[in-house]
Picture 1 (tube, rainbow, N blue to C red):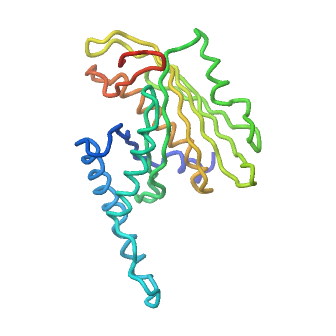
Picture 2 (picture 1 turned 90 degrees about the horizontal axis):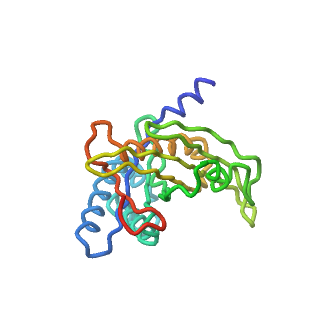
Picture 3 (picture 1 turned 90 degrees about the vertical axis):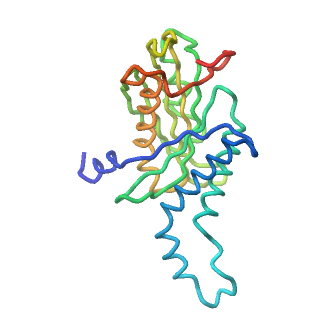
Length: 241
């Protein structure tokens, strides 16, 4: 592996869960303000540079602010999270290049389901490890080992019906969540899905999602034996696990 490629695998990602909250709920407003503050911190320097470069003869004032960017991002993510079924969660991430966020927010749909087969190989079909319609070339499959289970991530370059290029990233985990916080042990299959359209992001998304996979495993079974941080409802299950 070249030094440049190795450096890509070490780029840090910031991952968060998007709450399922409706407008007017305290959680909705609190999370929106959290995202506004985060984006104000991340975009302040860039906004100053963009405002300085705005043409004097544009005929209108510079139309963007860090607060506006944060509120728009929060509204977009909350709306997407609100459309997911109860057994799915929406995560969003940002990759840091040279200490600064380069792409944000990158949404990932995370689905939790009880294992439907003793053999987890069926997950390879669900993530399109052998290819899906629309793939422009054979997918790249990488295997992932977490603290409480194994999985894989699948990256494929694709082409839309109108010829536009994009990439898909599908991943799966078979987790054996041990008893914790008084809850019994449970087996969980986790599916992750995202699409990316920026060429530069295509080289980074696989390792970013792998970091999210490790976070999911760690939050399902904290190393300090405290109650799990990540609660979820599995498909076909009526209760939270």
